[in-house]
Length: 500
Ligand SMILES: Nc1ncnc2c1ncn2[C@@H]1O[C@H](COP(=O)(O)OP(=O)(O)OP(=O)(O)O)[C@@H](O)[C@H]1O
Image (cartoon, rainbow, N blue to C red; front, side, top):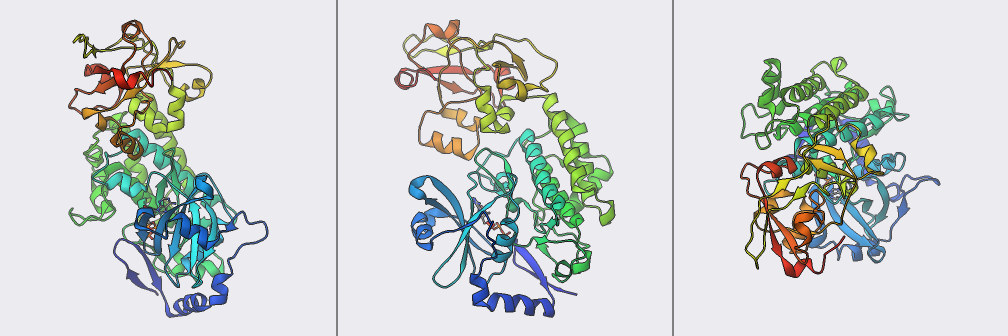
């Protein structure tokens, strides 16, 4: 039986002498290390080390993205700025890079952080080049104090995508078991989609395979299946266990293991609450109840509890997890669609929302010159019973968001850019938007577009600065409507960004 070694919050690997020898032999074999296991048809390429060095400014602190147990990760800008990648500089002698290259060169999916290629430095150490994920890791998203915690709609959507990624692995032939599913291995791409990454511990093959059976248990403390203590116990259900922990983390915003709490393990903390039906206590206190209320939390909590069952056979297969999460996702989006949630759905979809608000808002405007102030109101208060088909219908029709619903209507008039400022910066907490706002650049706010409506028409020549008055954590038009936002005018900027 293996001895567990643990490196703080990082991955742990259990070794027995036989395998230790095997791994050592593999890693000491320089010739072998430089032979990247790719075949003729592999989609991955070999990058020049000098290009990676130049693209990261000599692996400078500015390009540094983070450090894991297997090395450091850098952002590299290549090919005259047309290609942005992440470069994983593996610690010398780390065999996980080989595993990652081998697995990722065989399976690709938009749900993964895909490999683009590799490189070797002059010492023969491996560098892996993977897709760059512009929005950091799920761990940072959930736990960073400097970012606003993601809303429910975002959390459930990300959970669906992670589950789908794991299901793709398990259903591939032969199956792949990731063995290190955790929030820091889920990265968020530029469109705010979850991507499963870090395949350094993954195993490809059927559980009966000698190679799989001969590989010592590995994973991360807090996420690893407690039943996976000998190689023979490995199955896709170990990934299901880790996913269950991740789901509890997503629901509660709690770390898998947090010594500030008692009990420190999120499972030990959550399971009694689920058992006693105290579902709302699972919710991340920073965001409160989800749209759909207790029924949604119950579904999520019960699913997570099944995933972390101590009996592996009782855990659902990943396909079932995906199905159940999709149901929750659908139920939630039918309960309510706030503007911010729509925004988080992803930027591309939001672009499709363009024009939706035409004819739906009249402003509360205070002109610096005239000193006139009017109350913001939502003009069109029609409600529809369902928003089920909203995404499909957006491509060919323009719509309007009214309250928390989407109505289809004909778009009228043109729209204006909005300059953010003042207290409104908290409205969007996406890192990118914040960065842009910090720089004082005028950005287009996708969720609130103002038509050249009656109230605006005679006030052309201004940029509208949205000032949120609500102190209860504005979450979108629904609250925008209720909290009587006002819009201030700023002539100078508007004149250069008048029309979209
Ligand atoms: N493709 C990527 N794009 C952008 N940032 C990345 C990418 N891959 C990793 N990072 C950043 O680098 C950090 C370190 O990643 P890495 O995968 O090496 O370690 P980890 O997952 O945090 O820890 P461990 O190695 O213990 O699993 C991540 O937390 C993330 O912030």
